[in-house]
Length: 120
Image (cartoon, rainbow, N blue to C red):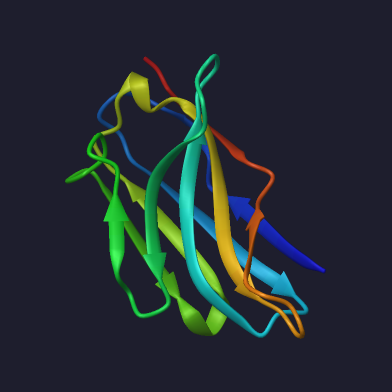
């Protein structure tokens, strides 16, 4: 089994910052890529940022320059530093990981989600 455990969500005022963390654990061989997605009420889940094992990153246009994704391969972890937060960033943020397990092709796994609320 593989588990993704997220932490770091909460309530913050506009212009504030939060840092999300996510760690993968379980019977895995390699974490090929990790990322963050978010889903606001009434909206579809959307990509926020991704990072590959070798450090290549992608960002949604809406968060470029404000969010920074990073990883720690030794800890099978990914982080999302969110600065200059806006009310429209309010959503449930989900961690995603593309993981290689024994005798299985790489598969995507999801965390349980962590709420981020930006409000004054």
